[in-house]
Length: 586
Image (cartoon, rainbow, N blue to C red; front, side, top):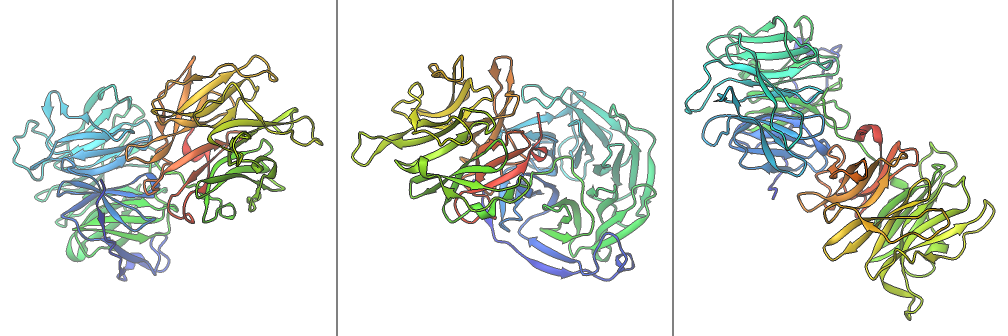
């Protein structure tokens, strides 16, 4: 269970320094440093994750999550194993460097998609690490981490304080394949980050009694490194703790203390200082976040800060940024979106107090916004109706599938459960015929969410069985025939509401998330069976109370429509759309 903390929003004026003159390309002259939260013991290791939330370590032994949408900070994981540096891998999973000291696990962990935590690396040549401090991840999912020892009385098993690389296939069934000791010619490696092109590994060698260096190592495609280069020497001042990079490759390092404490910005090639952002508490680390990627989040002392910059940040993982379909959304619940094949008609469900009707929004051009919808009278005449699906408008006969609790034998015409019906349109000028039930599909249970394959021979739908919702599939030999008896797909209870890519090989569906919310999942067809559904971590917003649900792909597979009560909506469920390029294709 998350614990809520009150938002602290204190704004600090940035001190005028030569590197922040009017012409500075990085920091605006009117930049303000906001204090967002100040209830920590010692904050560290920020990373931008799902929902554009900032995950960061409070080294009192917990991981926190700050939501820009709500302004609230919550406990994400406690205890954390003394987690320090955090990052998200290309799949959107949280990877943590867990350090030493009381309660420290001295390992690298990964939080899987089901919420479980497993060790990615615990030892090198059978010996436990000193105190994993910070980490960075490349586009192949390889983890690079530093292993100094600053605190903790646990006996050391490794004499050197080094940089390591973890090679893993990312599978929860298989532990890390290889842990390689990559860099040993440093004194106390601390912060670590990769350049956007994955060709340079930056390491902070930060020894309170020795080196205070920013180093650059050429990185080869196989993960090996070349000869180190000194980019900056802090001398006797406190060197870099943690760091991040922008899309230009410039390095943002948290360094210094007191009057010299802040974020130092260095050119990626020659180490020239480009800017300095003073911070009132001792800075420990930083990361870019927010939808525009221009907000720099800074952990310092007991607090979390934010400042808006001119340049975009870089990250291997970046959350999706869905668009709210404002003109369709009301104070009522909008759900079950479905797009026509010509991209000009959007069907959806409008729900209020347990009653539903199918709505239709029509636009003249595909690049126009969707106007407010109107009730589909021919569908809503009898009973509640929802879950519309229409076949290709350029092919006839054309079918309009939907679910309704219509029951002519009941006094009010409404039954106790939803069944799937269809209407038929023989040509472009014809009207849809009267609704006809799919007799082979209908049972005393609820059937909803029809989806028909492009060839018209396979029907996917949802049925609520005794143990919850399931996905079913029914087939037929020819387009005008009745469907055969349906079979249930082998997904666990809760996975339903399928929509498929144009080739029929990838399915997006709704399923349960670990925290009792709903999320959008993806499954891939392997031969004759579907893979175990995986949650779309780039999409599912952690602050949506009900979650992201009811996925519907456009007919060309380029956009995903869904319903959610994520922050920014107008109350209840609203409709959203996101380009599939942001979600990630299989």
